[in-house]
Length: 588
Ligand code: PEP
Ligand code: MG
Image 1: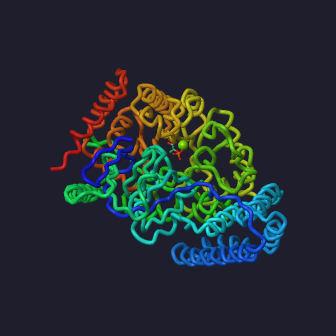
Image 2: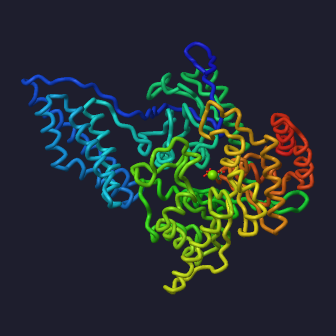
């Protein structure tokens, strides 16, 4: 990890993933399995050891009640109810009595005894043939971890409750961690691992806060409370910045804010190129509470609703009714603008914790049991979601799309299940839009290669470039070691997109891009030049893409793409696209 700096100031370089500058104190979030020593307790210390256990249970209880009260205040009653299950674990007399029995028999320190017993419970619950009880395994794991941390005198961490404005520096942030981030207090997100398309970054972008990934071992070099600058433009973190550095960054921040202000003023204008081509720009969202952000950023509806976040939030499988309420809220709040709901995309980089029966550990999760593959094997869960989406279509302009389709067979099976859902709703007299459009995400090379076949069976395409790039170039999108090889301007990517668009257009199907590529003005012109009809992105990034659209001619973008398709070097293609964007994004 390169570094430089003056006096006590240390500059550490990573990969810039979300723009912006933040200055503040570090909240260090290092997630490891809690490690604890194993030792014998002398006979005369036994009473003390049991008292230590009771004290840890008491402290844990107080901590959980405090979190529950805060969650209730900030997120509502329903979200807070999850902690009831955690409190019940702490009251479980069998678990407590068994721990004490194990202690009396082995004389091992209480951490070891409690861990042994709770692991047995976790295993037993995980194997039960009842969904509700199986979910309790996750609760026991969480609570056990907390009790052991308290026994060791460690403070537990939680991204959902930051005491004040903080810069999160983490070794890793899972999608469910990301879903729980305290959005009112996090001012930047920095991770040792990860890539530009990891979900922590997607969340940071939706919060309009800077993010940097690929910092390798930064978490070992900063402490909780250290003061740092996060420069999300060039990907550096400055630990203990000197006075003159703070001054320089203060000036940059004022300048950037001015530009942002002007971009947002221009954002109220329609998204039309100088030569009169309309380019709908829609929003990517994960939760219903982002709908206001969609409106504030003048998106023409939602182009990607990542529905799996309803599942990842609290690790709970939502019922048909719960999903219906969320999708209906989105449809209603967008008025006549469309809302494209993507069916469940769990697995891969989005595993669902606490459900080992649904998702087992896989050697290659990105090539494994995820998204549509999972839904086609869990038809009941899938049908709950499809019915919920269909029912929401009675309340606005709803579109549905399937993620990770690899070929026509999967698409046909998914559509057959959708037809069954339509028939069920008709039988029950429940209204839905009979003409709801159903699209296919193009994220896998085999889908791109069979775009002609898929276009005949789809109403539209949405290209998920985050995955399409990782699968085409064989670059794990979450692996910082090879992040430099993740090149959206690789000639292979240009050709794949060009071919998908051509096949779709032959059959009069529209093509959107909803991967991160769409949100960067440098790539946006290239995509539009390749024939892409619509773009969808995290709301705060709409303003700069719309600014470019309004400052360019589509004919120039087509010429740019035509030239790029003949070039060989990703770096040279990038430089050409960057120049195209820079020449048009001048703001005097
Ligand atoms: C994509 O792959 O580009 C996409 C939009 O889906 P996700 O990032 O959720 O995998
Ligand atoms: Mg994807």
